[in-house]
Picture 1: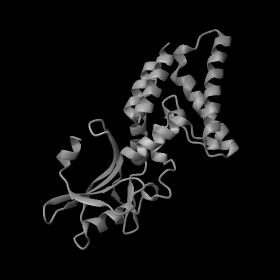
Picture 2: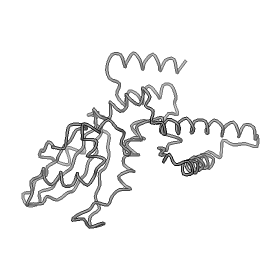
Picture 3: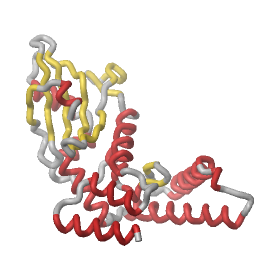
Picture 4: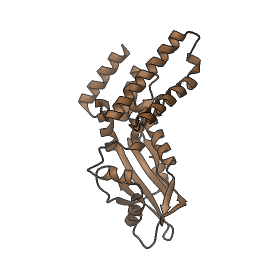
Length: 252
């Protein structure tokens, strides 16, 4: 009954207007109270991705400055911000030149701004694709058989450890639980390796490209001003530059 209700709401909503990520979270919660939030998992995965890539090169020297992008979803504006704070302006360059110099150190983001590549999935956005989530994790496979076998084995072992309370002395029941998880894992694995895109993936990808905004904040310490460079996926590298107050951004 819940699933039927989900389909009625989902398709009627989709036919009327674009389905937002917040709508998808709501519809999925109707059909399954234990479903993961697309917004939460996507934001967390994006944030973790950039936490692992905090090293920013200055004058081609490693570890000279630790700075990176952060990720945040704004429910008020229905925007997904990927932004970098606290960059000090080089007084010999314009704000735009400062921003482009920083951005060019991030080829994956540059690709998302390029009209030719922006439709391709980006690793830092993988958390939004719900079929790629297995037990609250985003799966990444190499298409190298030995590595992928080991990755799947690790995921199943982690599942057993994290869910040991659901196992009992009934071996048949335990095997059925593991078989169900293995089937789910194999289905996701096949989809990732075959690079298949479901209708739901297409909706999510369209939404992400519509609502994502990239921002780099530049502090002009000499003139006591702050600016930001702003980009939209697929619209090119030339940013829109504006004066910015961090307090306004934090309330968005």
